[in-house]
Image 1 (tube, one colour):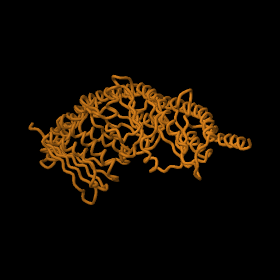
Image 2 (cartoon, rainbow, N blue to C red):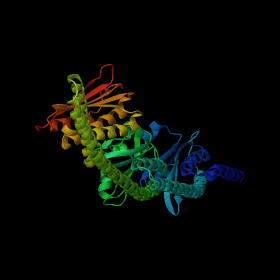
Image 3 (spheres, one colour):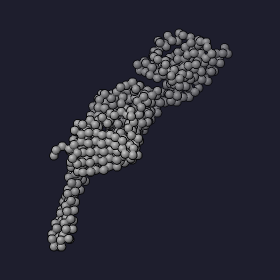
Image 4 (cartoon, rainbow, N blue to C red):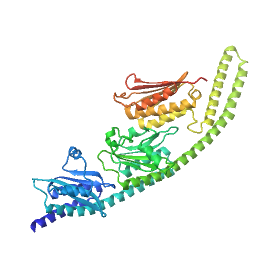
Length: 514
């Protein structure tokens, strides 16, 4: 009788920290540790079951990582649990919540030898019954926090969109809050790449975000592309075993659970949110997936609002450009032209030396008029990013890359860049600029980057950095893509060490006969 009372007191004392647990993860680990201590077991484990009845999490006490990996196939049902429990050196009971089996609690090897007794089994069964209540409470607490994080995220994104934040800033905010809502190590927002079949990571937050930002995903077969095609979330508990996962923290083996959800309704999704956790982290629960899905659906509305505001601002800029172009043409050019005629007439009345100087001034005015007319043409035809001059678009790409590089690249132009580069070659030039600067940001650890676009008989794009160069075992997939673009246009790609250290990339293609 005294022993029974002692066991009850020990059980009540052991249940106290479990009952005080707030978050589910802490509660589960406390249950495993407490169970081992109650029956003096050397090893304890809790297998959490998924919706399909298989174990999706395995929390242990007394086992090293190598021992956990050596267990092999884990029991996944109560029937197998009962079979194993017939061995008196092992003990197992199910944990139930809301009338369903939540997981299985296992204990093995009683310290000091011997076998588990009937009293041990009863003790663990009482623990399991009380642990079920603690798990329910912790689950409710986690769900309340999840709703709070989701509501705060929705408010922040909506406020940013309605107060006029640029679409790119809204995308970064979505990535930040998606990582927070999903309690992920990394979250990215992938959107269709303009003018291409692939996807590009427009924003990233968390571990490895500087490597993921700007990453271009292959056109088909990836998690993200599958999500956009189907309109349904896609989840994997082990990303390293999924061939369709292209996203990485840096080393592929660092990714464990991963989930991707569309932004907006299918068809017409604006992109996808991808959340990932490190290896051995808890998989994404159905509650988190559902909440992230709801958050992503609401962000589609915010993105639409931000895009409409950006379009309105762009339209206002178009009107301003047209007005400026009209004023330049009707006022400035005409006055310069009249001044040039007057100087030319005045120069005839002067001596030879003065006449020569006046003629040089008239030539300068003519050149200024030509430059203004070129500007007028650009203002009237550059109403969209795609129609803007090559020079402007390259500078815009360099400005975007500055956010991930941490500094602004030095940009130089030589030759008639805006007038001599055809639209099809211009699109390739912009794509090469993006890819080259993205590679420098992700891999080079550079402090300076120089970009030069020269146009004469051909188009030569040179990107030079002062980073640590290209490691011997680096994947050349991105460079092969750049080389393929050059080859398609009859050109070439050359990558070599830069003088003084770093890397020098030369992308050269011929201009078509004009």
